[in-house]
Image (cartoon, rainbow, N blue to C red; front, side, top):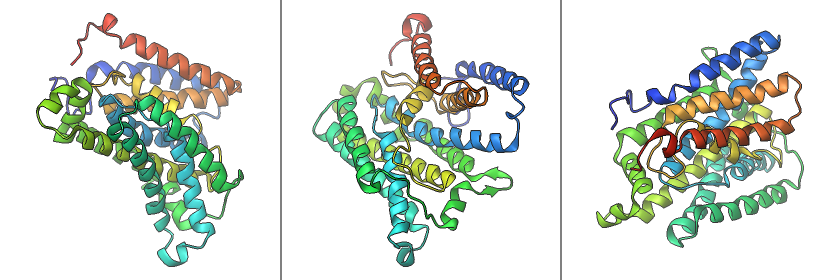
Length: 323
């Protein structure tokens, strides 16, 4: 491991270059908008960053292994709707309000399992396989919700994700713990080293007798579970499940991961970079809203940020060698 890595590999100096940009945007918005530093806006910003970070933490591990999941946004939506249906059908009377958490995460795990089977066992390209599940799952979201917003969540469920602990939004705590676990797995466990090896040189793992298919399958299930957790967090923050919930979240997650310095070609990943990328993207999106700029520009900005991150991380510019 590079000598620059510290604390479970959570800090890598060359990714701290995002910090000045984050500070610049924050200072500029403090000057330009009186609403930026209000408590309500900070809570909204924290929730947005947290939901994206939960997904992006899993995406960091997946992309490091040279995988990708375009279905995470749809999974977020179906998990949220699944939790709403749980309460709508009165299942909480038998299994309690917190059973919705298990149900929502299980929905995500099931979608991840399907992706894993398609990619790891059948051998379909990850981009194509997860693009198909993205569309299929989004269709399920509309079918199960009948295309309408579903409300009626138990207040105790909402409190789990949208309440506060010692003045800190619980969504932030969930996201922070997720990122810490992801960093530990990636940098301090055999599984993390195998994921990096999978992205660096899959053939070597096969030669060494590693069960590559099982490793890939597990990584997609993990991604699905985290997308399900993000869906529950989103539903709690909105106190409702909307059929369009999670739309474009896959692009946000990929943007965050790439901006943070994780190589799209696999073999190299950094969770600290992902954390900074999530904060930066959340700030940019929040700034666009506060400044009254059309939301259409947000998609343009996200795409531009991805392109810049890819170019800046190119071996041609960095002189880095493939692992």
